[in-house]
Image 1 (cartoon, rainbow, N blue to C red):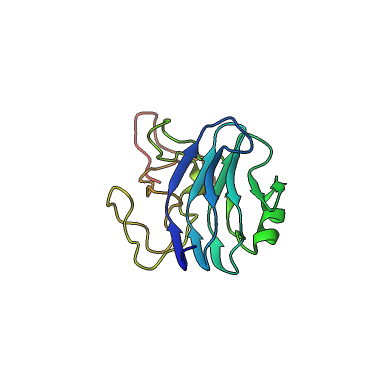
Image 2 (image 1 turned 90 degrees about the vertical axis):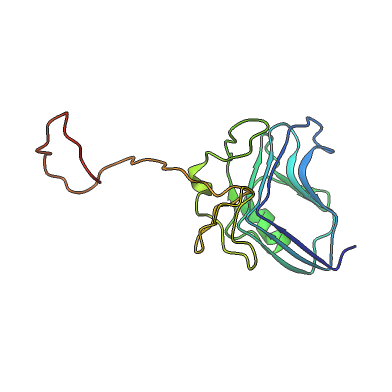
Length: 173
């Protein structure tokens, strides 16, 4: 086994239908491990992640998991359906998400999931994404791509006064 594994800022999609063999990410072990800011998604019956051996020394958090099945993860012959049980088992993933990343397409793994935007944490030595775009230095996006997208205004809370503009005039927010 490798002494140190650093697995950060990846977007991985699997679509195999075998619940036992199909997984987006299979971790076999290492002595020390960092697994941060990744998207592990399985769009069929398999799991998003399988861990054969939970490392003793690890920094495992700020990931996003998704599986079409009820079981998104597996370790020690146990399937997991929620992040609380999973996090307690691996002693990690306290800030991770269980959401559909809504990828652009089967081959373009740019996420359209607003919850992933800014949900990561900076990792020393990684300042750009897979396309060499700068990562947000305080709250980078989870996955291989830094999302450069305006998710839009969903509700105007203030001001509450009636707008004095006409239909053809622009309003700055």
